Structure formats: C-alpha cells, structure tokens
Image (cartoon, rainbow, N blue to C red; front, side):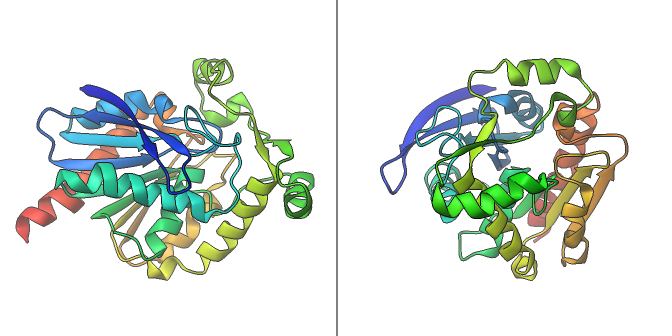
Length: 277
C-alpha cells in the first residue's frame, strides 16, 4: 500500500487535504467520503483492506474537518461539499482511467447521495454506508439548527455522538474522543444545511442512475436504519442490514466481513460486468 497526501485548492480558495492509498496493480478506484466530525485518516484500515483486493482508494478531509481549511464543522451551503467532491473526483480519481466507485459514510453518504442525484460526472457505482438521509437528532438541536442556523449560523452546537453509538469496540470510542482532529460540535448553519439537504434528496432518489450498495448496522442509533429504507425502492439498489452492528460497521469486530462484502459487490458489479461488456 502506497499512502500519499497532498493539498488541493477548492474553487473558493479553501485548501483541502487529500489522501491516496494506492494498490500496486489497481483494477478500480474508490473515492471515500467520511462522516461528520471525523477525517479520512480514520479510514486507513478500510483502505488497506480494499488495496488488498486491487482497489486504489482516494479521499479528502471535508471542508471544516481534519486538516482541511474552513470553520470547524461548518458549511455556508451544502453545495460546497458537492463542489469539493466533484473537484477531487475530476482532479485525483477520474484521471486514473480506472472505473471508479463513490463510497460515502453517514454524512458522507448524504453528500454522496446528493452528488449522485445531480448533474456531475458519475461513477460506475455507489456504496453508501449508513447514509444520513435522516437522523435521530434531539428535538432541541433540530429546532436550534433550523432557527439559529438563520440567525447565528456560526454558533457551535454539540453533535450528541456518544462512544457506544459508533460500534461495540470501546477502543474505537477511546481513539475517537482522544483524536485532536475529531470535532464533537457542528455549527447551527451546518445543521440547517444538512436538514435541508436530507429533505430535498429524499425526493430525488429516482434520479440516481448507477448501481448502489446500501448497507446499515441494524442497531445504529445515530442514523437509524429507517434512514436508508427509501433506497429499497430505487432501481439498481441493493440494501443490506447487519444484525447487531452499530453506526460504524467498518469499525465493528466484524469489519473484515463488512469490507469484504463491499469488495465482493464492487468486483461483481463493476469489474465483472465491465469485462462482460
């Protein structure tokens, strides 16, 4: 595995931190979009497992996250995430000449879904892990996001994530809350933009034109399984629930099985079908 980092200037001048885990003889490229409050460095082990299957992995810290620039866990417009994602795809991923897969987790799954429903260069397939098309946000926080997001959008609000929400391995929670790059708050402006994006994209799922793998931990308390249920009615989508697993299925003790299932699906959907074409 070759792990490389770089910087990329977004359209508004903000600097994005990018990362590449390159397989020796790649057959497909995977573009990962991480979740709220975290950063792409938490995905090393996932990238390593995909590298072993001949898949090069590309990612970046979302604006306001990790080593990327911007106000922490804030966005002026949800479209900024989409523009950044398109920039990374066009700059880092598409030039490889490999078929590519867009893989988004949680809020990254919401971003990926919005991207897939828009007029953007499309991947060969999409993988969505616990996509946050809905979330169990406390009523007070939801109200604050809607109201304060208009008045004081930069106001930081706690994101209500607890360690046992992530997975059943307490070491993951310890590392998460001990990570200086992890954000445990998000702004009211971010909350308002995310809630609007959720509402809008749920009505646009029929516009997705690529095959999808959607998977979810059945015991997810952060983004409940009902959030991904609408994908059950999307043509070309395969939805899987993992009994007993929580929000970060890729960090559960069963992580190798989960990522192995993702790699199997990519091979079947992207590589074998393209070779048969």
